[in-house]
Amino acid sequence: MLLDAATADRSRLASPFNVCVIGSGPAGMTLARRLAARGLKVALMEAGGLEISPESQDRYQGEIVGLPYFDLDVARLRMLGGTSGHWAGWCRALDAHDFESLPHRPYGWPIGKADLDPYQPAASEVLGLEPEREGPDLPMTQAEARLRNIQLRQSPVRFGENYRDEIAASDRITACLNANLVDLRLGDDLATVEGAVFRSRAADDSGFTVRARAYCLCLGGLESPRMLLNFTGQKPNGIGNDHDLVGRYFCEHPKYEVAEVLFARPPEFGSDHFSPTLDFMLREQVLNFTMRVLVHAPPAASRGAALRAAAVCATPFTERLAERVLGRRQVCRWGGLAEYGIRRDPGRAPVGSVIMYTEQLLDRDSRVTLADATDDFGLRRIRLDWRMAEVDRRTVQAATLALGAHFAEQDIGRLRVRDWLLAEPVALPDPPGRAWEGSYHHMCTTRMADDPREGVVDRNCRVHGTANLYVGGSSVFSAPGFATPTYTIVQLALRLGDHLADSLPGPGGIISD
Image (cartoon, rainbow, N blue to C red; front, side, top):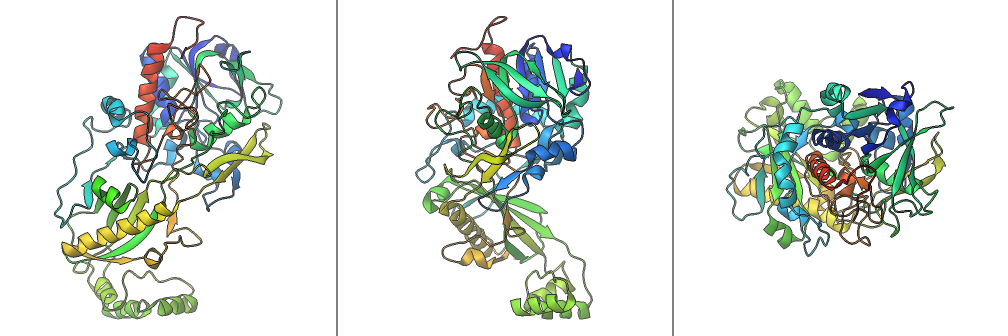
């Protein structure tokens, strides 16, 4: 059933549900479908509509006080299907060592890869992928084992588009659009959620309450902590924040353009992905990463045009001079005679670029907090303070140099590394943009840990100190790894669905510890 909070008969939401899932992105949609398949009655509450709207997106606006970042109202999508509406679809499971604590990365998960592996076939089905796991590492010849040539898969699924009809036809899922969460009401023990309060965007809407045996926040790595921090009516520090951890450890997957490639011969691939071996990570004391090598195929230029481009690209000074004279920037791939060869005959002198994504070291002070400004529901807006550590920058440098050494020793080609990566110490260029930026991956802000002094949720995604409140999505990641998060989000949602289906007692009960 698919309703709209602005127009629906709210009596359809009056009867208690087994589970109230808040948010319909990859985590919430997957969780709701899993619970329904297990026979549970589910309320699926979505703050947006079928499409994005400026009015709804406005509630994502906030302040940036740390590293430069995207405008927050474009970093997420408030609509059925959530931010899957603009993801690129790349999928890969986390590596086993992503779950483990390492000497230079002293943060691990309370669960391991083996706890999520059973959900790979179902996650692949949800994401429209072939059911087998991603392919094994591709063979590569190396003088020493620095890198792995990994494989990724690409999902065609947009959750709102792909699962809308199924949700609308379901007799076990009641999905409600334009239902904005404005409060979670706790019982007298302050340890049990007794109701979730929602409002439509109508100014005169007094709101309505959905009751369930369990509640699951699946609002993403920015909004889930923002909601928990805002609900201070009964707990002054917010729900789940007894140890001042909600919103801390914000991580991204920083994206860098690190080098250009001049290939020794036409490559046999259109793109390749390289990640470190565990030995390389331990030896170099760096984090996990992936480097995507892209091959470019620019059109051939005439001899005269190729000579002019080579002259413009001869030195950084000539590049700047040409930009000032012509009023536009010339795209220079290599410079000098190599530039001439590339322009004149790109088939014989192929070029490429290297884009890198890295995990981050956890930092307590990289965090989501609340700004003083409020949205039209009276909830305080986000203040994002994104930070990076020295090892984050050093990882980019070590990885790029390792790829350059590999390409040179195997006569694959030569890398022209960005100047800022050769500096000691490495400093990020200012401003960001093509050189570096985020990836819209918001992780670890309600991180998973067995000890409530180290994380917000336990190994089953239950908020510490609250009997029936859970969090889904990448905010529960204990550490980010390098893989795009959606595949792991779906695995975790499937696992949470089974946990809830197996744990819920009879009617009227709550989940016990």
